[in-house]
Amino acid sequence: MIDYTYRSDAPITPVLHSHSYYEVYYFHEGRCNYLIGDKIYVLAPGDLIIMYGMTLHCAKVDPSVPYIRSIVHFEPDALRPFLTPPHTINVLQPFEELKNHRLRLRGEVKEEAERILAFMHLQQQRQDRIGDNRMRLAFADLLYFVYEQCLQPLRSRPEFPSDKEQTVQEMISYLENHYADDLSLETLQQHIHLSKTYLAKIFKEVTGVTIFEFVYRRRINQARILFLLDSQLSVTEVGFRVGFKHLAHFSRMFKRLIGITPEQYRKQTKQADPGIASRQQDPN
Image 1 (tube, one colour):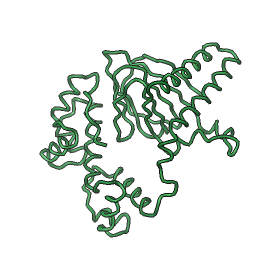
Image 2 (tube, one colour):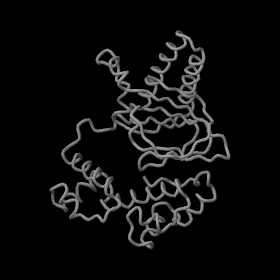
Image 3 (cartoon, one colour):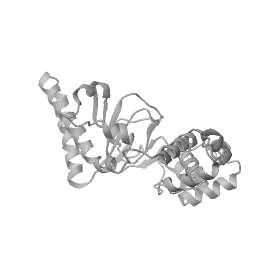
Image 4 (tube, helix red, strand yellow):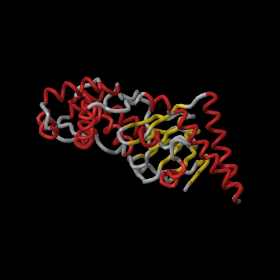
């Protein structure tokens, strides 16, 4: 039910992967860009990530410094019988609703998380029935700790999305799957069966950006991921892969959103390879 690795410093090869189980990932030290879907998280010690599992993810690390992390994998279905309301809190809610979420733990909450992880490891090392049961209890405490830290982001989510928000979510899902295609408002109109004027209006109202600004950001994020995973790819090839027909347009959008040109970004990844790109502000 629980697969726990404490303070691992084993070398890794960055491979995008997914799995059916849930994951709690804690970053102790090192230099790491963590890729989850279309997001890139530049990690700092004390960052904890909860993962739904099915979203493609991988760590891109700098092997010149120790990369130390603790990872818990667990099967959610094994826990559900013990999470029946109203007697217990559904500690799986953050995984189910936030899907993939980073917590930036600092100060006392960081110390608390590390105490729980260390205690889980201590009991795991005993290799007896008491140690096994105490480790499981500590794991339950970890889930309650994560749930408590996720209360604010959970509360900020609308409980019942409106028809407008559901339509925008449908648009986002379509754009996520087709961001590299030759997109137009007419394409969205045909897919969702609402007028393109209305779709453009509600998308801006709900997300704060235009449809094509969203698409450009998604393309540039994907370009960053491609550069991080394979710094040998040319700028032209990456631009075409993410949906830009013209190199000049790709370069212009990349610099506007990231602050440097794709050539400069690629050069940084090559200089760090097999390491990590320097820190740039996430446009999302």
